[in-house]
Image (cartoon, rainbow, N blue to C red; front, side, top):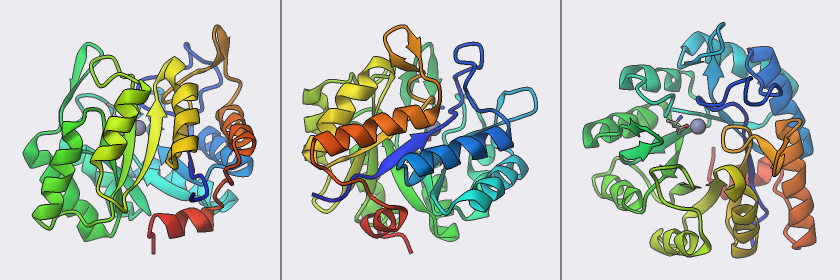
Length: 270
Ligand code: KMH
Ligand code: ZN
C-alpha cells in the first residue's frame, strides 16, 4: 500500500471561534496551525482563509499572505479551496488559482449543504477546470455525491481534466451522501484504476472513515473544517491533535505515513 497522505483542513468556511475557540483565523494563526500539522505528519494543507472579521473570503491578498507565512515555516503541499463558502461568486472562487498553488479543490456538481445549496453548475465546472489547467494546478475532485465522479470523468473525456485523478470523498454533510462503509466502497469502486482518493468524514464520522481509508489503501483528511471534536463532548485542542491521532492509528494498522516528497510522488505533482 502507498504511504498514507494526511491532509489537514484547518479552517473551512463554516466553523466559528464560538464553536471551537481553538479555530485558527488570522494568517499567523493559520500558518502556525499548518506548521504544527506538518510536524505531526500532514503533508497537504487544505486552505481556506478569513477576513479581519473572521468571515470566509477568497481574497487573493489574504491567501498570498497566509501561504507566504506557511512556506516560511515548512514546505508542505498547499491546496487552495475553490469551494469558498456557500454563495461565493465563481469568479471570486477562481481568483486565488492565480497564485499557482500545487493543488486546489474542484467540486464536480451541486449538492444540498445543510439548509443551503452548494452550487457548481456544468458551466462552473468547465471554468474551474480550465483555470486549473491554465495555472498548472493539480485538482482534488471533491465528491459529495456519487454522480460527481461521473461529472469529473466527463471533463476528462472533454480533455479538461487529466488522469490519474485524485478524489476527496466528503461524507456526512447534511444534504449530501451519508458516511457509511458501503458508501465509501461504492465510491472507491467507481473511480478509475490508478486514481488516488482520500476521505473526509464530517463530525463524528471523521474517525471511523479514517480507519476504513487506512485499511483500504486510501488517504485521510482531518481538521476543524470537518470536525471540531476530539471525542464526544470534548473539543479538539488543535488541528495537530487530530492529525496526531491519525498518525497513531496508521502506526497501529501498519501503514506508513507519507512524507511531503512521497505525497508529491503519489499525486504526480511536479
Ligand atoms: N465550504 C463549502 C461550501 C472546498 O473547499 O472545495 C465548500 C468547501 C469545499 O469547503
Ligand atoms: Zn474546504
